[in-house]
Every structure is written in C-alpha cells, then in structure tokens.
Length: 292
Length: 240
Image 1: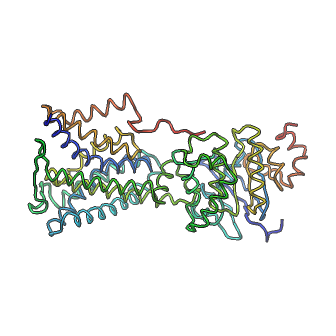
Image 2 (image 1 turned 45 degrees about the vertical axis):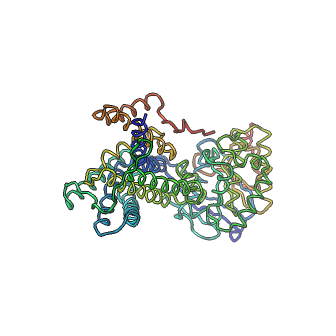
Image 3 (image 1 turned 90 degrees about the horizontal axis):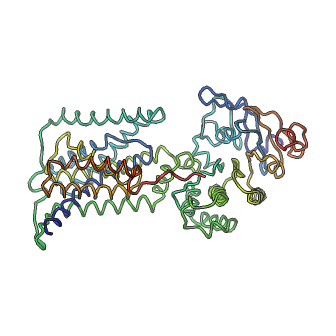
C-alpha cells in the first residue's frame, strides 16, 4: 500500500511536468492546428537559461521568471520566423518547418555549450526529505507540484477570465469569425506562443531540478511524452492536456515501480495507440464540432 | 443616391479564388440609413462581396471605400473597428462558448464598460430568448436562436453598417419573418443594412434598393419595388 502511494506521488510529480509541457502543445495545436515539434526544445532552452541564472547566483523564483520570459519571447520569434509565412501554404510545410526549428535549437545549443550533461549547483535547491505514513516525500516533489499548481491556476485564469483568453478561445474555434469580431488573429496566435513557451520553460527548469540533468537533447523525450499526454487528453483541450499529463506520469511511475522500468516508455506509447484506436478524440476531446 | 451620402462604395471590385474569377468588376453603393439587398443564385458572388467588404478575403483590384476612406487594404479586424459588422453565412457563432461570451466577443473592440453593458441589455431586450439562455453553451441553441445570437453579437460591435449573409438560411418560415422584422427594426434604429439573400421575395420586401448578381457581375439594380416587378427577376428569383 505504501509502495503504491509512493509510486503515485512520484507519478504525480512527473505527470505535472508533462502536464505543463502538454498544455503548450495543446494550446498551440488548438489555435493553429500545428504540432509544434520544437516545443520540446523550448523546454531545453528554458532549462539552460535557468541554469545560467542559477550559476549567476539567482534563486529559484528569479531564475524561473527569467527562463519563462526568455522562452516566451523565443516562442513568439519561432512563430513569426518559421511558421507564420508557411502556415497558409500547407500544414505539412509548417510541420516540416517545426522539425527544422527543433533540430536547429538542439544543435545550436550543442555547438555553443557542448553535449555534456550539466547539473544545477548544489546550493540552488537543497534537497530535503520528509517521511509521512511511511511515504518519502522529497521537497522536489513539493516544488514541482506547487509550481505547477500556481502556473495552471494562472493559465486557467488567463484563458477563462480575461479578454485575451476569450479571443484565444474564439480564434481556436473559428479564426475567421473571430476576425469579424475585431480580433487580430496574428497577435492572438503570438500571445498563445508566448504563454505556451513560458509554460515549457517552467517545465524545463522543474525537469532539470527533478532529474538533475540539463543537456541539449533533454527536451526530446519529455516533449514526445507531453505530446502523448496532449493527445491522450484530447488535443486542443487544456484541461485534457493536464489530465493526460498526470495520467501518463502516474502510469509510467506505476509500471516502473512494479518491476517494469525497462518498459516505461513502451507503455506510454502503447497507451497512445490504444487511446487513438478506442477514442480518437482523446479523453476530453470534442467530437465533430457542431455546425448547423 | 448622391455620392456625398454614400456610406459604402465599391468601384470595379474584382476577386479571384485561385483560378476562379469570383467577382468581375462590381460597382455598388450603399447610402446611409438604407437597406440594400443583394440577390442572386448560389455561387453568384453575393457572399464573396460581403467577405471582400469585411476584409476577410483580398480583392485583386478595385476600390472599396467607407465614409469616403479607402478600406480596400485594411485588415479585417480594423474594419470592424470602423463600424462595419458582418453576420456571416451559417451564423458562425462560437459554439464552444456561452451565449454571454459570444456577445462579449462582439464587444471585443470596445473599452467602454458602461456602453457595453447598455448594449448588452438592448440586445437581450430585443432577443428575450437569448436572455433565458445566457449562460448556456451556444452550440446547444436552435438554428433560429443561433441566428439571433449572431445578429446580437454583431450589434454588440455597435455598427454603423451591418452586413447580413443569408440570415434566413435553414429557418422555418415563421422565424424568417421574425428575423426580417428584426432587421427592419435595427435599420429604423439607425443602422444601415446590406443584406445578402437567396430568399429574394423577403429581401425585396424590406429593402429600399437592390442589386441582382449573376456569376460575379451585377446584371440589374434599382429600387426594390421596381426590381420586384421586373419580369426577369420575377421569372428567375420570385417563382414566375
């Protein structure tokens, strides 16, 4: 029983990181129907920026803020430079462009900073563990859960309570109708990249601390997993992405905890295939949208 | 209609969709306070004309001016700010948002909280059924209610000129009558109307003037009365 709880707690932390990444995937997909394959690499850039801040002696929150802002701007630039012009041409062209951006980010980082695995300085986030009913709780878990919770609440507020959020939802439902309401579609898309990439940066920092690893290809696997989480939850749905992320993290953790750590990644992909077979629109995905 | 009073003016407007020449040199004028109808068969270019005015599609040549200002190249979201609202074909409401949120999106360009609130009341008074369904998801509304929502949403932009694209489409005859009398009321309250309709009979009943479009060209124009009694119009659009 305690084993199970322990694994669920681990899964929750890891799932939160997936959820933060998946939210960006799903928002960007929702608004321009593009699988932004460079999203995973934005995580990596975020982790490096935060690492740089940490090495300069900044604390967790300032590092988080700098990383989020830097990546938000990076996201806007990526959209402007690599996607905006090709989007109207074809979805495939934009997708290809996204893969190009992904490789560009990975190997630019590798060129300038090397492929070595780096870690956060020891004093940046001193580890502590607590024991509660036989479960070991690491303060890393609390950090990940707490940060995710705060960011998700802010995100929900932006999407459902602000004028900008309303515009984002309108554009993602029907861009042309939104234009007829006076919504500037291009700037709304830019804002979506801004927010999604900031979330990715936060995930990058948390991932870097949680696994104590920062390297140029670190975004690849969590990026793919988060993509699975987004599809699992129903791509385009923000609550779906969060749910998908948590579910995926927990499943992986359970598989790993009960003797199958070799199969952890395989299980993730099997889940994806099963969901796509049984419920192609994902857990919280909308079916065919009603148009009368 | 003297040129001075013209609110909207289209001069020799051409639109191409790839290889398809959709509008072939349209000239059209809408005067302040008028209801002008565009009638014609499917594919004649009626919707294309409205979409060109709203800036949703690009013209290949020609000039569109509004209140004497050239808006041919103005982006769609800025055209709304100038006072031109469109109720698009098929209503295009945001089916995943609530009725309230749809109306709020109509007021997206506005910052005058007080005026927005007043207009919201005005719209809900005009469409009591929307008031009953204010927090409902818009996709659950009936076709007629969705049309009312689309019109209400356009009213929330506080337009000087309202473009309506096939507001009667898919509605029961009784509802069509209701919608058309609402359009007349909106016009009497001071909003100029440019109406696209396949239901030529209804359109000519409420319009002051009308244009007949055929395959991208205007073939007839004049007062609605005159067109309603024109032999060609009767034969082609009014069932003989």
